[in-house]
View (tube, rainbow, N blue to C red):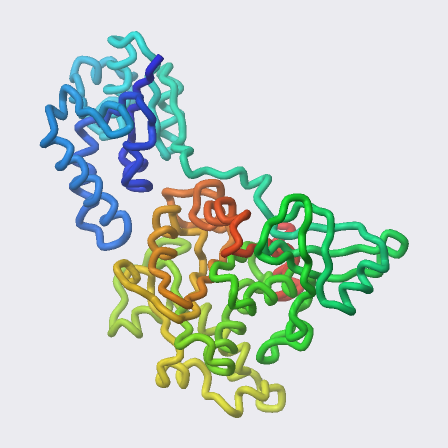
Length: 448
């Protein structure tokens, strides 16, 4: 039996194409949603763009029929806008009195349930609204089209128990064939069956061949470090290998605070741009979303406005160049470069918010998107489709530190990309688990 889905505004703002994702069922938009879209459309960020996109879609659909009676969709579903019946609104509990938009949405769903002989489901990303709906006897669901199971998220790392001779063969030939069904570009730790302390690290090649996989020893440069930044654990070695591999245009690094995700990405990007000249520019961006209460508009030009948001990026450059360390402890690179200011002046480095990336084509650049867990799947798709020929994109983030109210650990763009690209030869992924920032930072992550 076909179902009726009553959609909340936040679902449309999260995914402007969501009305097409309910198969051949009926999609109902309460009239109050149109009012909310009108309020959000003036916002400059992605929410405003999504609101405008939904409005344009509805405007195009209304030319095909009566939007109140229903308009047929391409997937054989039906879309219509429903008016809120004031009599139904008055039947809501006294705690829900008033003309709030949430109450109007609940009233529309209740009226449909009372008058229709099919299943009525309210879809919202608002947890409290789902709780209210359940209390009123309505079936409520989260919008789960782009959700992934974070408890079983692909880590990008596997362990294989092999004969000791196979490990020696890998060290000698730098490549071996193993009987194992592994994903392309997956990191593998080989462990000697007779001597567990005898191990080797390798990466599968980008070709998947049934139950057999070719393992390639990690790049020797990884052991010597990049610009004075050395890998401190096996996950960081795997990450460096993927970052250094120009044949892998997409790398995702997931890990808690202090695991070195951003630092490793910046170090390799800087090495590829300024030393190897593989890419023309290192482009770094991150979503402009505050952790706590927003302090409002910032004064100055765009560089001055961006400084508070991009300071974590500058901190990583200071660590690489040693520009903040005492003179006797400064890195050797601090004598040859003035830090990120010199790179900016030479055009080798560009730091900007994601706000201005839409519509661009980015060829032959090393693009790092930090804090990618604050992006929706739609926003990440927008970024990845900007990549021109020869561009490498690195997404870093921690799904447990999300400041965007419209997404969570299971529905953010970072985990979505990890799950969708896990078997793709164009992508590589590593989950970093060991904190290396400091003992205090590591212990705080564990205890708090």
